Amino acid sequence: MLEHYPTLSQTRDGFRWDIPVRYNIGVDICDKHARMTPEKCAIVDVDADGQATTYSFGQLQDRSNQLAHALSQTCAPRDRIAVLLPQCFETAVAHVAIAKMGCIALPLFTLFGPEALLHRLRDSGANTIITNAASVDLLGPLRSQLPDLKRIICIEGIVAGAEEFHALCASQPTAFDPYPTKADDPAILIYTSGTTGAPKGALHAHRVLLGHLPGVEMSHDFFPQPGDKIWTPADWAWIGGLLDVLMPALHHGVPVVACRFRKFTAEAAFNLIRDHGVRNAFLPPTALKLMRLDTPEHPVPMRSVASGGETLGKELIAWGQQVFGTTINEFYGQTECNMIVSSCAALEPAEPGVMGWAVPGHTVDIIDEDTGTLCGIGQEGSIAVRAPDPVMFLTYWNKPEATADKFIEAVGAQWLLTGDKGCKTPTGRIRFIGRDDDVISSGGYRIGPAEIEDCLLTHPAVQLAGVVGKPDPIRGSIVAAYIQLADGHSGSDALATDIAAHVKSRLAAYEFPRAVRFIDDMPMTTTGKIIRADLRARAEKEAENEQ
Image (tube, rainbow, N blue to C red; front, side, top):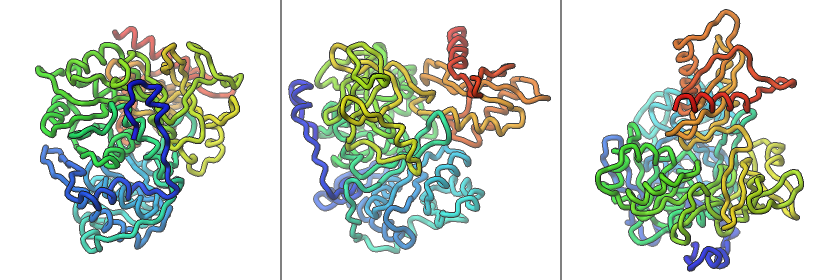
């Protein structure tokens, strides 16, 4: 754990990594507690109707052991097992079981459309999917294109084309011998969007959880404290929900609230916090902005609130202090190397517009890629993390060249490039300046334009498509598509709506373009690449005119 010293420098100096040779996430977040305190609360599962069911660490161990036995009939260590589920007890069970088997978990978002699912499942070679009834129907037409897929297991009763989760588990013993994984053995494969090509799978080792801990503890003002209980609206399919909340909390024996809102609203979020005594939350900036639009009459006190994905402004931090009675701590990272920068109000007051410091245990700096030297105070450069680092990914799945391109040799060491620009402030904090690539940050999601552009080109009316982020006061940015139409088609509101729906039905719901604009000539380089900078400038001008 991160020890709380009076100053940041003392806290950093007092921290040492303790990464054992042998380590298993499933044993860590479940079995160690089940042995000592089996009745202790692990998950509070709140369904869409607000009904809550509490599950203990003992129950989590028993059910995950049963699932591990059932899965072991067709899965061997390092096989990929997909978890296509919302926040619920069974999602935690699946991740614990997969880890204890020595297999690799593939978290998938339930809002993914068929093309997004097909790419991830086919690229990873997943042989099993654990999912719900709605997704079984979605997966049916894809099975013929997934030669590695052997089993689909459904948690919602008997569904054609799937095995029944609870019946499978009930027939198995509750004792299971975990596979003796090493800390560097692969454990989790999370796909991340980029600007070129299809989404890449970032493969993480079991040690990734230990690598997250100091950042989680710092962003939650030295988590855990007595009485802590944590929740996030961020889906557990993303690294922010899975490794910033669910797994670190279970590691520390802190109860996690799982919730499946039919629709996220400020009122629902505030009610959940009150009703279940939530003391800690990771609230993405978009969630905070929506909650601010519907501020409750009375404060909703919390011990800690963390946020990441966009820089928080002075007004939002002040609002959080008024409503939650605590300062929102901002953190920074990415799927490949997460939770590496954070503020911490328990150590120093927030500096609005500045992310925070390098988290103890991580070396984060600003590098001039042209000279291979460290940048001075206030000098813009590339945000980079020194390797090796326990939180750092192992590799991109089946993409050694892309992995090599992620690193640079500088000042006598190897550094991972985040792809973002920043600078250091006189206080030693890191200020985020902008993205070095074209990834769109919208509502807490990182969205790669290439996948959307490829999907747009499958619409018969689209000849060329360029996708950029358009500034938005709530989501940070929205996806904006600039379309050059094929011969025989003319732009209209109806066509714009149809094109947006075309993407929404094939990719994730958050990826569809909320703005579709028709242009006569697509800005292109001489080598045929879309000049997204020109499109971004156009989108920014549109946003200014709409204010």
